[in-house]
Image (cartoon, rainbow, N blue to C red; front, top):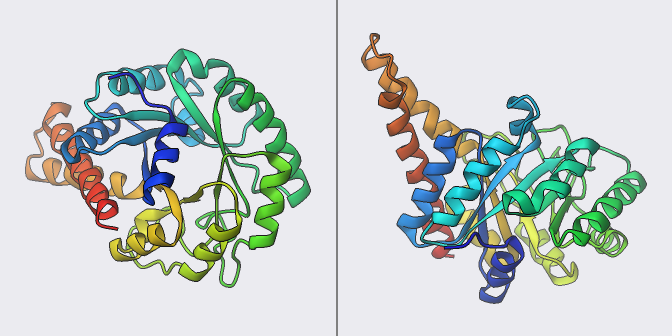
Length: 283
């Protein structure tokens, strides 16, 4: 199957009133486990590579993106490629320039750490160049939690400002601050479902939820019903993978073959992906 386009997957989610899941890739085992989980559940999805993942690989995104592209091309379900949380101007330019080579069909420009006007200017400039390369563009208004930003107590995305931001930047999707937070290892976040519904009613592009690993499954379902159309998943994958590695190494201190501990870790990633898909299907 040819790699899917993010725009098509998100548009389909909008038509069906559901959400497309987008999973963070750090290692090849992540990518293989994600695709296996999507295939097991018969669900479409996105592989996403973040700026942090690129920096982990000494700034070289190509090898990991090439592997993700190959997996997407050979998957039995629609799988697309997305670049996530890009802040560095060089990485943004490289991401746009090399997107076609690696089958990347979307990116998120993260200028939320800047002031509002600078966020608008930076995002609009990236959106223009990315649209010229036929990419779907996501942005963030306010900093998503886990980065001392808009998920601090009492801070949320304002619907009126969100409408103005989308109009000024021309983005195709908007990550919003509604109560979730990055890097949560327990599902205790409380989403503002009323705010999601109010945002969905006025913002003319699909809404994106970051930090979903900290949200209980039933609340994720409520968020989809309220209007979330793309959901990012990262920490839950890392927690499952690392737990399996710890178990394998603790069980045998003579173990040296990485295949012996990475295989169950990869399977644990697939389990999380399949469970995430089941949650969204039930919404």
